[in-house]
Length: 429
Ligand SMILES: [Zn+2]
Ligand SMILES: [Zn+2]
Image (cartoon, rainbow, N blue to C red; front, side, top):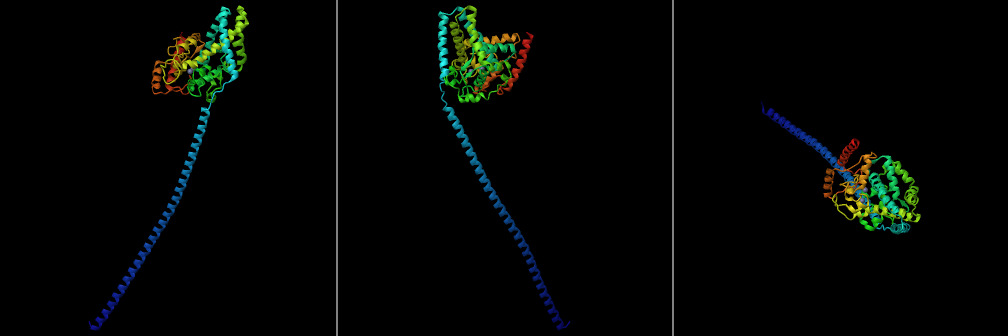
C-alpha cells in the first residue's frame, strides 16, 4: 500500500467518523426532542388534572358553603320553631296559672238553700215528723247509695264486673233516686259521673283532675258546686273513651231522660210515699225526704273525693294522695279504702280486705250468687307485691280501670285467668 492511498483512506475514515458523530448528535437531538414532547404532554396532563382538581375543589367549596348555609338556615328555623313552641307553652301555662275559679252565684244560692233545708229537715226529724218518715229517709239514703258505689262507680266507671240488664236497671234507678247533681247546668247522670270519675283516676292530683286533692278540703268537698271546672278538666273529658257506656242502652236511656227521671225518682216518689202510706204532712216529707236526704247523699259521695284523699294511711302507694279511711267506708258503703282503690281500680271489692266494712262488695257478691253479676275482677297477692315494688321507685301508671290501655300486660293476663276461675266457681255453686 502506497502513501497516497493511506492518506485517502484516512480522509475517508475521518469523513465517516464526522458523519457518524453528526448522526449521533442528530439522534440524540431527536431523542431529546421526543423526550421533551413526552414531558410536555405529561406536564400538560398534570396541568389539566390540576385544573380539574381545582374545579372540583371549587365545586366542593360551593357545595360546602351551600350545605353550611342550608344547615344554618335549618338550624335557624328549628330555633325559631322551638322558640315558638316555648312561647305557646308559656302562654298555655300562663293561661293555666291565671285560671281563677269564679263563683257561680245561681249554683251557690241553690246549695245554700239545700244545706239550710237539710238542717231544717234534721230538726223536723227530731221534733215534728213521724218516726217512719225519718226511718224511711235513713233506709233510702243507705240503699240508694248502692246505685253510686256498686253502679256508677264499680260497674260503669271501672268495669270491675259485668251485670245483666235487671241489675243494671235496678242500679240506675237507685242512682237516680240519689239524684247526683253537681250544678244547675251540669247535671250528673251515670254517664257524666263515670266520665268525671275516669278523668279523676287518669289525671289524679293534676289540674285535669275534677277532684284535685291539692286544692284543699272545701273546694274538694264542694266538688265544683260553686265554680266552673278547670279548663284542663274540660279538655281531658274529651279524651276519655266512653264507648262502653255509649253501647249500654240503660245508661243512654237515663242520660236522655234524666230531668224527668230525676223529678220522678228523686223528688216525687220519696216525698209522696210517706204522705200516701202513713199520712205524713207534705211539708215534713218534702224537707226530710227530698231536701235532707238529697243533700246528705251528695255530701257522702263528695267525702270520698275529699276526706279519702286527705286523712288516712297509704299502705299500697305512699306517692299518691288517696288514703285508707274507715270513716269514709262507714259513711259511703265501703268506698273508703281509697289508697288501694287508686292502685287497683278494677278490683270490684275496692279494698284488699273486701269485707272489712264494705257493704257494696257484699251487694255485688249477692247478685253474683243469683247470676245477675258476673266476670268479677280482682287482685292477687302477687299483684299487690309487684305493685309495691313499682311504688318503691315512685312510679304510678295512672289507670282508670279495667280495659285501660296502660294496664300492665302481666296483670291483665293474670286477671283473665282469675276471671275464668271465678266464673267456674259461680257456675259450680
Ligand atoms: Zn279518688
Ligand atoms: Zn274509682
